Amino acid sequence: MPLTLYSHPFSSYCQKVLIALWERDIPFRYRHLEEAGADAERLALWPLGQFPVLTDGDRAIAESSVIIEYLDQHRPGRVRMVPEDPVVALEARFLDRFFDNHVMTPMQQPVNEALRPDATRMDEVMGRTREALDTAYAWLEQRLSGRTWATGADFSIADCAAAPSLFYADWVHPIAPDFPTVRSYRARLLARPSVARAVDEGRPYRSYFPLGAPDRD
Ligand SMILES: N[C@@H](CCC(=O)N[C@@H](CS)C(=O)NCC(=O)O)C(=O)O
Image (cartoon, rainbow, N blue to C red):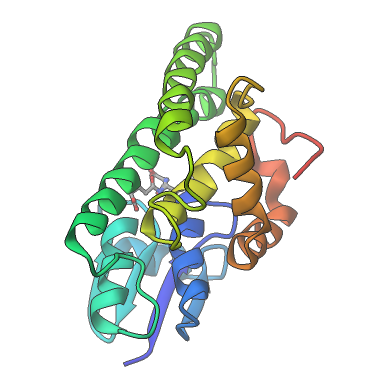
């Protein structure tokens, strides 16, 4: 059955799944959420409202991490995003959760605040986000030490999550020079073809970034 991904090029969670699809060269139909009727279709498939959503025939799969695991199970190939070794797989799943919960989530708070009609709490929200991201960057500085990719030598689901989360987090609260390992990991991610493609396809939508996109990357 052909796969369809309901997706938007500027969405961080969509980029996470697109990176996994492109890493594995899996063919799929890209249903861009700005195409006529696509958003209504997506909501009918997954009424809880978030995207991306993948369909495989008449089956709809939501949640970026689950979609990536689904692809490993249902489109097996030479490369996997969840490592075969159960010990490394647990580290990959843990770091996937880390990037979503402790980088992506705090990064999104000021973005959400800026989208509110009266963004009166911005200073407070930004303060909390800076603190949370600095704690996450410091923790990652230790954890990623000596590793090329999040879990070691092989690119995994954790790197799919890391790429958009560190990409946007650095826009909201730049990774300080005190964290050279995290800075070079982000640069390595951005140089990876699947990630570079996600960044490039999101580029035309940078005006959507409510805090103002920086003139770099
Ligand atoms: N836990 C979800 C989060 C998805 C998510 O938050 N997607 C954003 C786009 S990047 C979204 O749907 N925003 C609209 C909304 O929350 O209503 C996942 O991993 O797929």
